[in-house]
Each structure stands twice: as structure tokens, then as C-alpha cells.
Length: 255
Image (cartoon, rainbow, N blue to C red; front, side, top):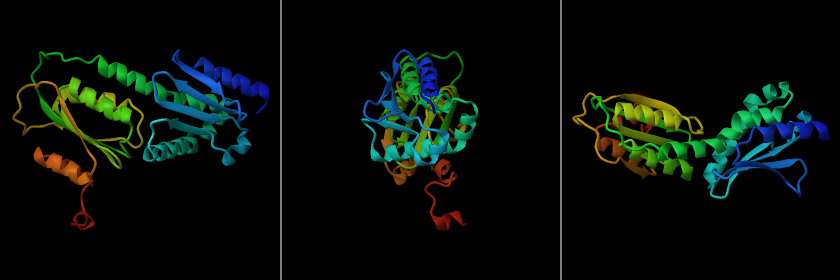
């Protein structure tokens, strides 16, 4: 990539940044750049190379000062998947780094800020409609991010939901409460950046005896699948997890 082409592409990237975001060049390593945001703990590192050098270069990295080893490995896998899936298409646009960064990487920085803003603004509102109890279950490749864990607790509280998150590998998110609140919870969670997030269940709970929304919600965290099963067993919902193939032994799965 010529110096002129590189500067043109960098200018496109700069023009796509939000006011709180900035692009800096690495003064010691040529052709390496970093994008940071005042509203996110994550940084996007990328190295501008010719397309022919792609196989021998680490094109993109996501880093953070507070990132544990497990989360770093999860992000590295996610980044590699995006490069494998989208790089050839990005090259065809003529501006591969701009295309990759604006499409896949900038939303990571913006998701934290948007989720924090949305969660902070959601206060309790008494609904005119009848309370309809329900529950939901998400699974993901992992749940490690301190930001996501904090936002899940805040969101659960503001929407009057009761639930838990199983941190580590795999990530599990369960919540119960008013069905309308659960739908809002699901929309918000799906808007964040995830690796292999899957909504397993979102449905009304016909067996629940609750009649109205309770006070502030309650969110808990567990670290083992056995603890997640025990939590669900306490509310009669253990089957939601075992039906998803989680917490089932190999012998049981063959029955």
C-alpha cells in the first residue's frame, strides 16, 4: 500500500470516529495504529499491510488494561473469525481496513457507551397492562467482560427482573419477570458485542403464580455449571438448561 493510499484510508477511518474516539499512530512501529474511546475500556490495534502480506501479519487486535487472559483469548478467536469471513470482501471495496474497522470493530467501542446510557436511563415505570410472567435463557461462548457483568446487573435491576449469570466458559444468562420487560432485556443484551450468543428460550411462564412486578430486580453470579443448575432447580427451571444440552452427562445424552 502506497503512502498516499494509506493516508487516504486512515482519513476515512478518522471521519467515521465519534467525538470521544481517536486514532493514534505508533511512533515506534511503522504502519501500526490504535483507536481508543473515552467511553470504552477496549482499544483497537491494527497494522496496515499490503494484501499479499496478510497471511503473515496480525491485522487486528482488541486489547484492554483490565482484560483477563480468558477474555483476551476469546477476543482473539472472534477477531480471527471476522478476518477469515470478511477480509476478501473488504479488499474488494478498495478500502479494506476502513471497511473492517467501521463494520466490525468500532461497534465494540460504541456498544459499551450505548449500553451504559440505555441502562442508566431505564427507570421503573408502572405498566398499565397486566403482568405476564415469563423467563429467558441465553448462552454464549463466554461471559467474562466486567463491563457486560456490570450492565447485566444494572439492567436486571432497572427492569425488575430476577436472574443470574454464569461467568467463564460457557456464558449463561437467565432471567425471569414480566414478559415485556424480558423482551426489552433480550433486545438490549443482543445489541452488545458477543461471541456465539444464542437466545435459547424467551417465553411466557404459565406455571408462575406471580401477579405483578416486584421491587428492584436481583442479579446473582455463579461460576460453575452445577451452580447454574442448582439456581434453576430452585425455581423449577432446571430443564431449560439440560434441554439445551448443558449440564447433561454423556450417558444421559444417549438415552
